[in-house]
Length: 162
Image (cartoon, rainbow, N blue to C red; front, side, top):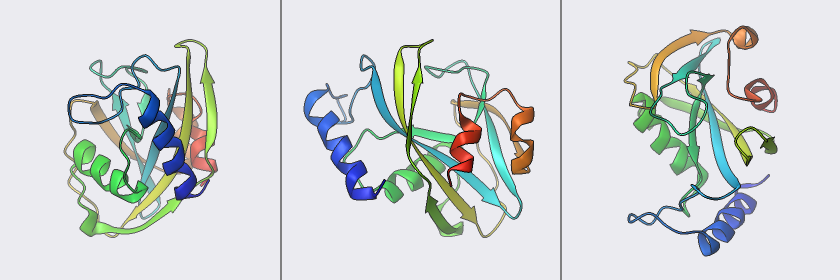
């Protein structure tokens, strides 16, 4: 899915859903939500993050940097924002950003359909990771080790789509 198409999807949600005081779209009561799943790669490893009990879904599961597409802004800006917020990674050390193939994931357990936009960010240097409240632990792993972890649904599919 191209970035312009993604922005059109966000715009539709923006028009029909309530907003937080800061203007972001509130997906709390929506049964569908567009999100980014950002894989951060340095050399031959990606970072996995263990979700804390302070997040809304999938507490204790391993994931990557994620975020709701809750503002009308270019995707790469959202990626930079989430990397800084969740890991303390600054855009100055990013060497490339690659978008994967978007897909829908219907999670009947929580009655939510996710429109997942996988993204791969490659770094030029190893960052000093500073986790925020969303995660309690991180590990650098080889991509083929991903299936050894209890991850959020379809994380391996997201990675393969890039």
